[in-house]
Length: 230
Image (cartoon, rainbow, N blue to C red; front, side):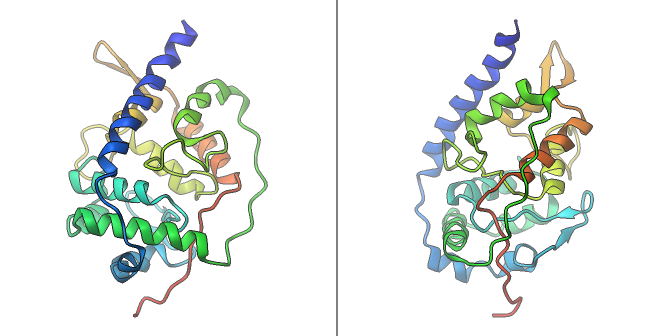
């Protein structure tokens, strides 16, 4: 019974990976063009320690060093309303598919070339009670959470823990026009639904432990400080 509990989310994850990968192959990004389009991004993502205040206070995610396909996919999700953060939706709505691909290429290349990455934190141990439930995450994000098996999935290692916690909690949220995420694969990891009833796979306290662990891992993500003015 325990094996069956984890098999369906794993199969769903792998199926979604294939579909998303084909969709994201449509556009090739140009990093040089992406740099010229990033002015709307650097006011938050180009400032070390910058914090968002909605729907709660947390550091905005590090995107330098993130995969190009994932950035394009995330922006597309905001544009379609699968992710509901109002500021990010407003920005995404102003972008074409080519803009998204170019921005993704820029941030991926910036992470590879820029110096001054923060030193890796001392990795925490996987919380013992969560080991079995976290094992399925490797199917998408890779064993080290820094090398996803498909570039359309995010690198998580070293990401800000408070951002990861807010993002994971968003998959718990239903019926809110301004908050929440509806990706079916991720939703299935944090919520089990049967016969119209919802049961949390990870409660809020456990999500915070997951976020703390992922944040402690060494990874390629960083903030590359840039001037607000170009």
